[in-house]
Length: 152
Image (cartoon, rainbow, N blue to C red; front, side, top):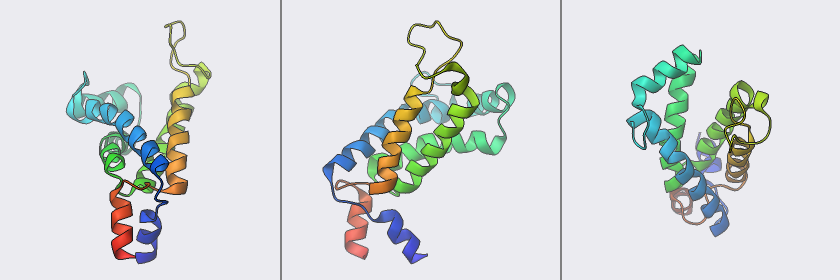
């Protein structure tokens, strides 16, 4: 178990990795806050769960996981706490989003409202940022870096 925690916390103390992690966390936070708390024009937990399970047909566990990953994962990424885990969770979530809702609409986002849904270019950007975090860790400015320096 200790070895697993060491792997999760180990990070390259590079400012660039911190910037990628902070960017990902800051971009994802409003989405999670919409779904969980109803902030930023969102509908909150109950309405989001209803939409995901009833209208989109997602299982309750998947719906709950999406909300938790977006909200708590984004906060953890901003802080740099277990960033590899949350980046992996976001990667899995966005691969699921691509296959369930975006692939049929092609690559491009729906900038001009002339397609039935969003393409997957935004999701690829999220996956790219998250992949860098999975490989390199949280970076210099992170709780992971502080903990790994003191513990290991």
